[in-house]
Image 1 (tube, rainbow, N blue to C red):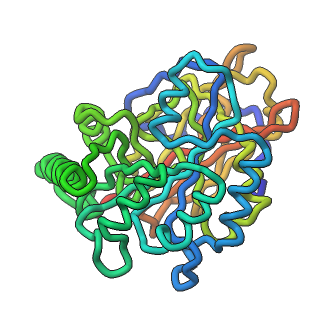
Image 2: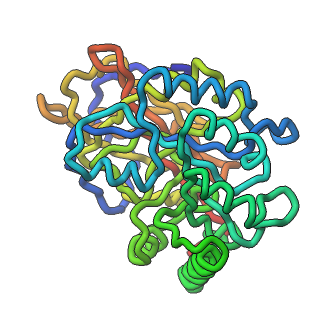
Image 3: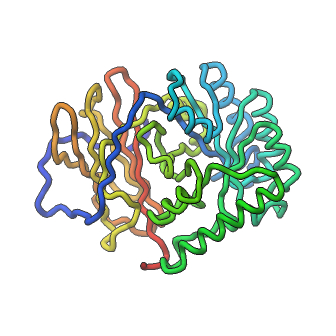
Length: 354
């Protein structure tokens, strides 16, 4: 793990520590099944290193999953698996965002070679334009066992719009995209991906009310039965993150199964110094090796409460989080068998003040 290491020190939460007035989410379900989900964008396109994976690395990923007996499912199949009575299996999901031509040209043939499905999220406004797959290419992907997901029509920064009109615009874009996909591919997407991983609680509820079974975000981690299926975590695969040793590490990561968290939103507070309080079961975990990483700052860990069945920790940046629209907070803990358990939370600062 190449994360910034912070010792797990048993401290009493200071009366000066900042708290956030926000709801607490309680997560209790766990049937033992887990799904590791990866997100890709471009394939073999060296013009865009930040979103590209080499074909050598991508094939190495697929070969590793194949030879290590992972069942590879589409996202909707994975959600059904997590809810089912099927036996526990090592399970992975490959997702691809945006529908660039390099996926159809370079990524799809490798998936076909290894007989693996994937879920492709498309923004319908760009289909057939510039560097994006056209409808004929998308139909070929569907015929090759690729699930199509909704990524809105324009792939806009919806949090830049005032709250008074944001939800209506967001809904209109989803409906438009659903209709266009139905017209061209004769199918209705069941899964959704938030553009840039950005959403608020009302947007998330709307996606659920519109009949989708799951939605993906841009925080990393492992999906399990207790995950909020409308903000499923995914591990990004591009640049150095795509090296095989990094991929193996993520493929074998376990979920850090959260009992509750506060706050249950991603809003950056006005003082730019957010906090995140998590409660989880410490059984079989090496708490002395807990690690925390916050982009753009150093992480402070405070233990609020500890019993044999639960531990509550608060994570805070030591400095104000400025200069970033999205800031990821990640914690990892090894268990006594050496497996790492992972959880992350995204803080967002939109361009408008609601």
